Image 1 (cartoon, rainbow, N blue to C red):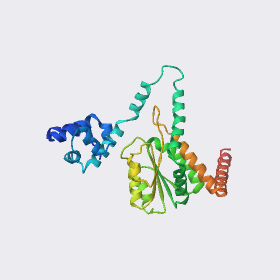
Image 2 (image 1 turned 135 degrees about the vertical axis):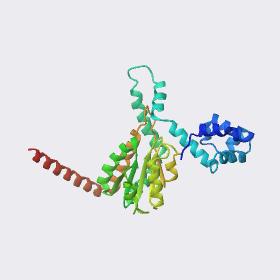
Image 3 (image 1 turned 90 degrees about the vertical axis):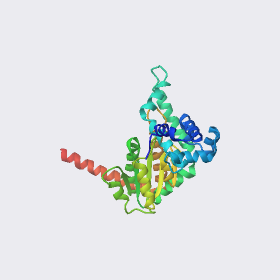
Length: 286
């Protein structure tokens, strides 16, 4: 469970020894660095031994330095809400009528940067995992749910074995209850800490399922629960899901290309069913 690490350290400061207090104060003043730097680096900067850094983390109630660092990472991520992101964006906004074009340019940059970060072999590996899976689950909340729904609709039209995993009274866990190594769960989460998507990936791993994480941070907790990670850029005045949607479109294309005639036949069957349903409803209205 994430705690307010800054408030916790400040509360515990009087109880720490001089050396540990020195480390704690350095972390308070350099929280972003402490979120990713190894204990040896913090020790060097605070001019103290590495063992003191580790013992200080234990004194604060953590199992060790890594446990404290993970909490700091979650704290930083939770602190950057959409309002903060929007405020930072507006602070750099030029005072002109065409300022909105900067959003378009950023989305284009996000797409380009995303596909530079994802090596082709990793992308093709993700496609193979999806095609070979007996069943597929898609997990995502809030903004990530939008791209997930689009992906779910068309992926299910291609494969017919996809489940959209959303919060409910145990419904997602009920779906995964009988899944195993033949099945695949894909979790999408951006700028978030511990949440439903992380819990779903953790449960899927416990069941032996294969897992793919789609996230914007290399240090995201989702990465630890994933067999494969696809990194997406989400920069913008709000969290941008343009690159994530494009990634899903590319995956759908590669799956269709991989399945060839089978994919075309499946899409034609869906089109026929939709056409028949449309005609049925149209006639009933008449």
